[in-house]
Image (tube, rainbow, N blue to C red):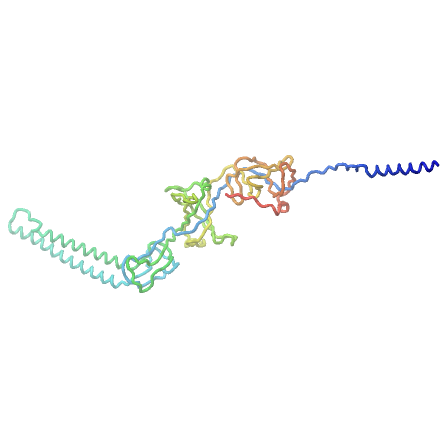
Length: 402
């Protein structure tokens, strides 16, 4: 009887215990302390230094003096010298073209004979004037004879005829000399426009020639660039050095040709659309006639690096250290951690940022590209040689125009 009573009670107790065990809340695991993940970055210790500003520009080479060659007399082309072919060099005074001299020689002989006739007539008038005075004195007159008596007007006329004949002779000699067209300066032929046997007038263009003593390049400077350079504006101002690089070889050669030149003058007005000021660079011996430099060619594009001011006591940091617009990451030295900083560069290039204020000497600059770096994030400083493996391949580099 007792067994019958205890068995149901035992079953009920076991069921209650099982129900409680299943429905009881799970035990929470004990918290595990995980140290924060440190960012790895290479750093650069920044220091003040002097920085040479170099202004970038570009232009096209042009001749400083170019002219259209003419004969100044009428005639027929008889000789074209080798120095008057397209691209040929010539010296000042060298004969380039000769016209048929026959007509000029005949005119010269005619002028010489005219001088001889005029001088003979003048000699006769002088003799008549002397005889007129003797006749006056023989007649016993005490007063001075008039100019008409002494044949002074006739004498002046004969003297004028002599002078006119000599002037015509000089002109005939000059015309004969002008039949040989000479180079006005040391130069080079751009193009020849006449051929053998061609009849020309005094205004006929024989060809285009330009001087070779030096060449010029017209270079634009922006208003921002003008604040960093002192340009020559009047006679006596010191020229500004400039280095020209072959614009045709840019991107296709690791060692493009260069030429040294100088800014010698500036134009007096700003460009109406861009507000740029154009400066004129001069390059001596552009065709390499006196040195071993490769020749510059008229119309050749070139890039220019112009030396501007030297900025004193400034910070120069790599441009690829930018993290956003005018933002960089500094690293605290005592407890390495990220500290964001805003900067205001006074000069920028494709490689450098130049900053005057807002930084201190000895600060660490993070130069590794970090995909995410909150302010205060702990940092592990690594060697600069490890930076390449730490850089994020997907983060775009920040850019800013100079």
